Each structure stands twice: as structure tokens, then as C-alpha cells.
Length: 492
Image (cartoon, rainbow, N blue to C red; front, side):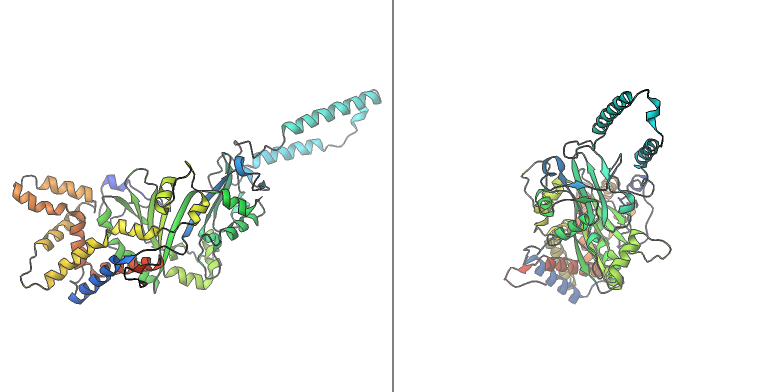
């Protein structure tokens, strides 16, 4: 990507969920003017994209599912049992080395109390008669029973104040389990695709392996429940939908991300765009309560080959093995993170049958082309790109060509770059800078306000490789979603 320029204080304060600064290192360095044959080939691809009808994926893949079940309503139905979770103050926070002893105080107190009870001496010597001693024993027995009743295990099916979480020692030895806890009357499991990873398999969650994923939870020996009943009654709180695109090499993945970054300025009026991981992108809508973010990154960035320490990243690398490592390094991942119920329903085409509830079965059975829609929202409709490509083709095939629009696009990108690639700031700059122009001049110059048109104009003649990359990605996404052409043939 291009070198990052200085950013304003207001922009510096915008950080991504990974702690990265909002980025402005968009790849807008000019390239060689495309050959007419390149433009014609791109037009052909765009027209094919437009003429394609999207059906649906065979199944939707998830990289994360935070799922739960109302213990008060369904706990007995699923035969839920808790064998080994610990009482903690904040169970929603995943276990860590720093808080692993959070629940030890109660254990230590119980141990000390038990030691006191085990002192060996003959208490009968303190009484004057055997009758008094028997009376004492009856009283002691009654008080002990009363004490045991008061300290009995809380009923998890009715006591919604219970807060429990998987112990750190159990948590640290598994890969792909974010957390497992009891909170506010819900039993919650938070797992990622890595939970189902194997040799040569990066891992994902979907309708065909959800039972296997839940069986692995039971096999931890911490809780138990009926899997079929759990699936029937469980609901979803967070889910990450993804599509993987396989490239020829790790270097090509990097080039694809650079190509995508060329299109990012088109959307800076609607998205905050931040770095994600080592070389990825995160697009998060500026609109409040949007409930989602889109990330694009190399799957290889999640690998860790360190021999000096053991972490979940090194464990995952060991699990997928050499074959999985090679696959991850050439995998470009598109992932839509959905963290509100409204956003889950909207993006997965799920009807709201119950307020504040999204059923796990509805999520698993989703057939919406989720990531393809997101790419269109991000890059713009293909019809707009086709119009710009035809414009460029017309320039190349016309003797009397005009450079007016090219000059406007060049100048707009300069202004955009000077204003940290923020479309809103760039638009304000144009209105302020040229406020003294005549109405006629201002009307002509206001073509600069046509943001998407000017950036697309710049891209088709100065970034032809990025255009080709984006078209290739869209075609691959269409193929993933079992696309068919209008004429009936299969596309891709």
C-alpha cells in the first residue's frame, strides 16, 4: 500500500476493534494507461457480472457463533448439567491467566473450614452424663442439616443471579473456544471456526457440522446437554459469516488486498476504514447502531510458528499442519461480523418471528449471498463501473477525445489525498475553496462533488490492475454462491 500520510487529530482518535488507527494508505498510485484490449476485456467481464442471477450457497460458513439457551425455559428439556464451571463476577469476560484465580477465595475458605472439622478429640468427655451427650448430638445433627439446606447448590434453572464460567485450566488447552458461561439465566457457548480445524482444514461452523461442534463441547467434561434439543431451542447473539477465496500464492493475496484498497476511497463517506491485523482492511459503517463490520484479510496472518512459547495461535498452526499452513497463506478471507440481532436478520434474510430472538436453526439454514451483497455495497453497482469503462473505451477510440473528465478526476483525487481520503472533508474543502467562483464556473466545478464517478474514472484509467482484481473477486464470489447466467448456463 502507499505510504501513510499525516492524519488529523480527529481521525487519529478513530481506531479499529484491533486497536489500529484509521488508515489512509489507499493504493491510489497511478499505473500505466490501460490498453484498449484490457478495457474491452474488463467491459466483457462486467457485462457478464450484470447478466448473472445469484441463487444461493449450498451452505453458509461461519467463523464465529455465540449461541445460547434460556436455562429457565429449556434447561430441563435439554437435560443441562454443570460439572465444572466456576463462580466468577464477570463471566462474559473470557478466562485469562490474570483472572484465573478469580474464584479461588471460596475454595480456600471451604478447605480451611473442612480442616477445622477434622480435628480429633473425644467431645463426650465434656458432658456429665450420656443423656446430655445424646441430646447434644441430636441438636448438632439438626443444626448441621439446617446449615446444609441453607448452603445447598443454587438451582440453575430458576436462580438467574448465578454467574459461572469455564475454568482457565480447561480454557487454555482448547483452540476455537472463546468462552462458555452462565449469565442472567442463559447458558452461552462462544466458538470460532478454529474449533473444527484439523490437518489441512482451516475450520468453519455450518449446518452440517454443528452437532459435531457441540459434541466436542460436551467431551470437555464440563457440561452436558442433549444436542438435538439444544439446537432446536438455541438462539444466536453474534455470528461471523465468511467466504474464502484461494489465490495462487501469499504474494497474490497481498496484491488482492492492495487492489481492494484502491476502491476504499469510494466508501469513506459511509465507512470508517481501518487496518485489520498485519495487512487487512476493516470497514465499519459510520452510521450508529449499524451492528456489523466487514473485514478483508489474509488467513495466513493468524498463524504463529514460534517455538519459544505455546499460545492458541501456535496450537492452531500445529493443528492444521503443513498442508493447512500452505492453504492459509494463499487464502483471502472476506468476513462479515454481525453483532446485533437486527443486523443478523437483515443480512441473513431472517424474518423476525419473536422479538429479541434469532433462532440458531434460522441462522444455520440461511441461503443469502451475504458477502456478495457486501462487496456491491462497498464497491458500487457494476452498472456504474461499466459506464466508466465504456467512457474510457470511447476516449481511446475517438480521434477528437476530450480530457476534461480526466483532468477533473485527477484533481479530485489530489484533493481527496490532501484531505486524508475523507470524502466529507474533501467535499467541504471544495465548497469552501471555490466559494468565490461564478455560478457558471461553480456549476462546472461541482462535478467534483460526484464522488464515486470521479474515483471510478481515476481507477479505470490509472488503476486498471485494481479493476481487474476487483472483477475477479466478484466473479469468484458469484461462483461461490452458485451463480447462473440469465441465459441459463452456470457462471464460473
